[in-house]
Image (cartoon, rainbow over all chains, first blue to last red; front, top):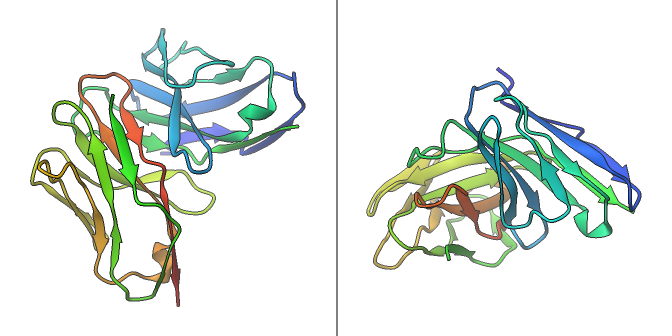
Length: 115
Length: 113
């Protein structure tokens, strides 16, 4: 049981390049989300999905795209990388959005640097 | 809107010292409250949780009590170990929103032998 798997673990991009951060979970979780972690700012929600075919914006969605074609996968796309997108990105999942005490399960993160 | 405020870090303690990391929140209704821990190079792991007022969450010697009257969820441990060195995040989950968790900014804890 792998939990939440993120790839790659590290990536360096040049400004203007595009790339996709992969996230997969094997727990049959409905809810998946992407966060970015920046020093002194905790985790901020980028996009989330409450089920296959359904996505919505979080707190900081600009410059990112997501899709949810399957329950297992929730890729995050950077359309045209900017230095402000240098961050650590975490994918998370949980069984449902409605469980009161339901915790989120996090991947190990992708460390992204934009030059 | 909902928000979580954590005490500023970093916090440095000697092994076996008492730990308190303060967390207060602002939210309408009755959110669930969580503490997550992040060890170096890893993702966040759930440490403990409380889903209603006066609940006490506990795990690995850590405790936190959901205090509605003071809107607080302070993390405590009686005797810290070097292996407790990590970043600790307080978070709330508001059932009226599909956006799930709102995080505090995190508190870096370093325990010296």
